[in-house]
Image (cartoon, rainbow, N blue to C red):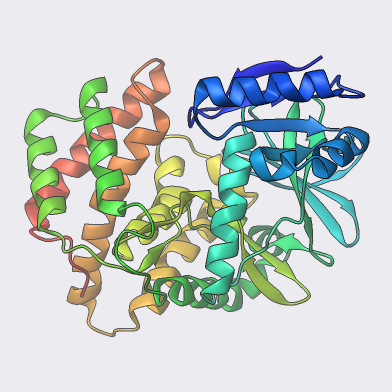
Length: 361
């Protein structure tokens, strides 16, 4: 028996998890459904036996057929990273799996694999998943990464290497930003931020005046074909065999480097401000070391001795980071969020007195 569903992109899906055999009558039903819906149709979780029948009869050319995923357990596995979307476990010395928190994560995983392959082809150091697996009720991406650790974990374990690690972190970031793709290859980072602005205005996390002024600054920012990761921090850089590799590629966009630099400020400064100890809880490092990461990132990225130029760039980055921070924490539904929103609005007000452009120097 198969169950028909629909993906977020509207493509009908047959879930063949319980199908052990398909007859000619069953094949005719599949063809009738495909003709009725008038579009590409997917058959998912197909056993090897059923896949052989579909391949022999040519159905693998007519349908998007995906074999049944192998099921694994991460019980007892070492956790080597946690992020917004999921947790990374070490399966063995050579293999890791990123398990997504949502049971509806399959389209996200498939999009990330697609983005990672495209990024790799264009010279961006990234890890490409070689398998998608079932982990309980959720899904995971499997990577072959020899003795891999996140750059953030290396920093936490060896704080004396902080300067070296931040230099490498900035080098990876600049490598990504140096890649330019044809216009429209990826979504516009600027349009993404317009969406963030609309969201936080709807929540009441920003005033109408602040919204209008930031929106005008975004409109005036020239479009760029450079690649933007979208969630750039040390937890998203794996180090395998001494080689840094970027992960979580589903957030790729095109735009100014400011859209990545803001994320560094959010991760290493914003969350700590009204929740002392957040850096230790989320990143495993002290607030002092977290501040060091931010300061050195700016220093190495811009490589300028001109303090005024650096200050102007930092103010521009912080303004955008305030928008992202408000979008990440959500509406004022608890005391901490209420304090954060109030303080962030005050920061925005001060920054708008200093920022008249989002173009980095």
